[in-house]
Amino acid sequence: METRPLGDTGQESTVLTFGAIALDFLDQPEADEMTEAVLDRGVNHVDVAPQYGTAEVKLAPTLADRRDEVFLGCKTLERSYEGAWEKLEASLDRLGVDHIDLYQFHAVTESSEIDAITADDGALQAYREAQEEGIIDHIGLTSHGSPAVIREAVERIPDLETAMFPVNATVAAKEGPDHEFPALARELSERGIGVLAIKTFAKRPWPDDLSEEERPYNTWYEPYDDPADLRRCLRFTLAQEGVTTLTNAGDPRLVDDILDAAAEFEPMDDDEQAAMVEERRSDESPVPTVDI
Image 1 (cartoon, rainbow, N blue to C red):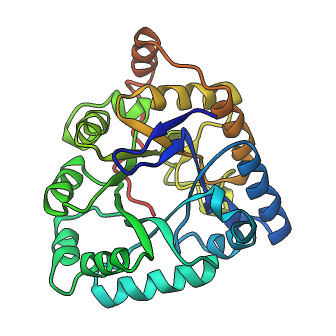
Image 2 (cartoon, one colour; image 1 turned 90 degrees about the horizontal axis):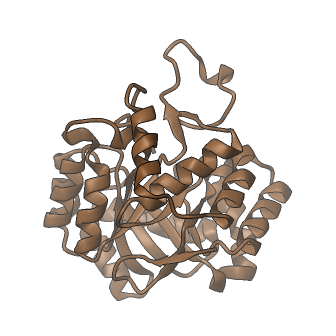
């Protein structure tokens, strides 16, 4: 599987990052089988979080045997010093590892959260100490909010080496500052910051009148599910300048087709990108809907 530099971190990540939230919907033997299959296909970057239910615990057995094959990303919603340390130590315990390669401020959507993170008793100080102790290697940020907040975070947190945010054709088709994510990917990559894309496979928000029990997939948004559509989605996102890698949709039933799409990735030219954007011009945007 193709790899790309993750900014200036020194990491060469596969174009697909395994979003381990998919493991939360499986029992342990199935989770082991999926994680082994993902790594066997060549994926070398894995993303997980405490908010993903049982995912950390279910990832642990494979990590015990294949930790050296994995660039491990984790994150926390905690913004305080003590809270960040507590959640970091809990994740290390659940994952059964002694260090995390990329630890991220999770779902930063407001300037007030940056205030809290950078305060004297904020999470940034905990991250820095953990980095000094060799418990984490790199510091990043994830966001489902406005690009302006991400830009502010980059200016105020010089430690940031990566950023994770939505990049897809529907977003690219929308006007206005809340949808400037493709431009943001270019900007950050020029500064040496690695860009991880999410919502690549998002079709639209779930209808308001459709309950969670009625949704056909365990995802925060309605996903594309046809293999041909999944391939187009992946190719479009990876064609955007600055994007290093993207995560799979969270439902385990979509993972195999997305793995196939990543393994068979072929570049998308400018004309095909433009046609895809035009197709989605009238579609409802899946961002800036906030999820974790």
